[in-house]
Each structure stands twice: as structure tokens, then as C-alpha cells.
Image (cartoon, rainbow, N blue to C red; front, top):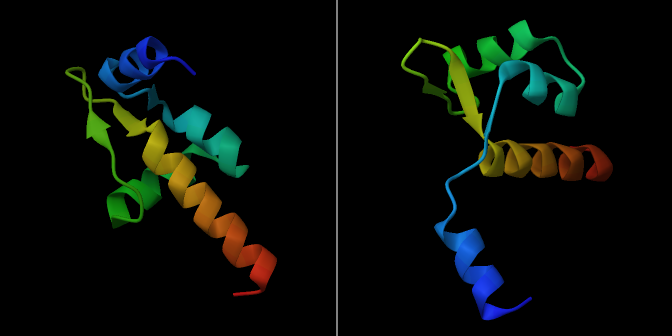
Length: 74
């Protein structure tokens, strides 16, 4: 990876996911993702139209943690 590529990635805005996209990653219903956000289990932001969006980096971190916990039997 070149310095230019690293700089471009660093300056690019965070990728935002819809509840449906998050649900597909976790293999749950989108309403479950909304409940997680309401309960504070996963952070979300609201669009100007009031829709929830989730930061991809946070979603991936949670998915990695849950996968790791499942593999270790926690």
C-alpha cells in the first residue's frame, strides 16, 4: 500500500450501513438491529430524514468480538 493510498483511506469519510446491511452481516432481522441500537448495544447516527445508520468500523468490531467469543465458548 502506498502512502497516497493510505492518505486517501484516512481522509475518506466513514462508511455508513443501513439496518438491513447490518442485519445481513449478523444474520438477524433488521428490527433486531434497531433494538440493539435503542438498547445501546451498538451505536447509531440519524440521517436528516430520521433513519438510522451504523458506522461500518463499529459494526465490524462488534462482529469480530462476537465471533471470537463464540469460537472460545464464552
